[in-house]
Length: 200
Image (cartoon, rainbow, N blue to C red; front, side, top):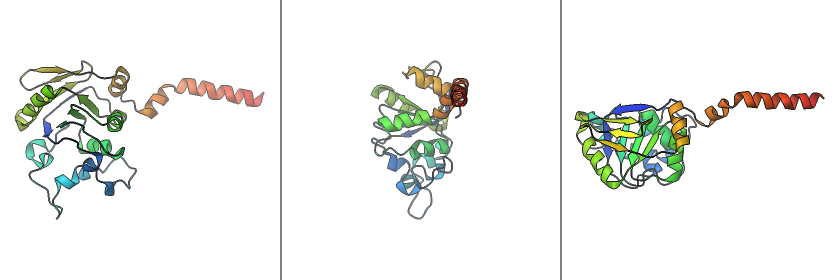
């Protein structure tokens, strides 16, 4: 998993509340178990017209936000079903951080396991970040995970809270497999001990 330390990007504003996982990645794309290739299907029902052409009104199709790595979203982002394809699609598109006032629990947990930083802010802070995001390519945000800050284009700073264990995992690029591999020496020692018992 790619470590998350600092990230500077134009933020894309998505002023929609209750964005569920079916909106993030519709059910017809859930047949794959690969984590790659889903970026083109991200928000597909909002992003594309019925004929397959791009909807120019959708935020991620607008020139300023096509390469956005930060998404500023409405309340209760990631609600609905528990599909892990939702963070996979966000990550494959290039989104490394989602900022909202609240997230569905399962989606929130899945983000950390896939290298995405979900940040919770107050409604007032979210309004400020929407104002920044709506300035397009003229404004960038910088996320500093180590110092737990969001720095705006005009020098303003917002502090955010994060669980220390999750912070450690993101900073070091550790998913569940990586955490297990950190204990490789102890696992090897235990397996050797089992072999010795079997031979004795």
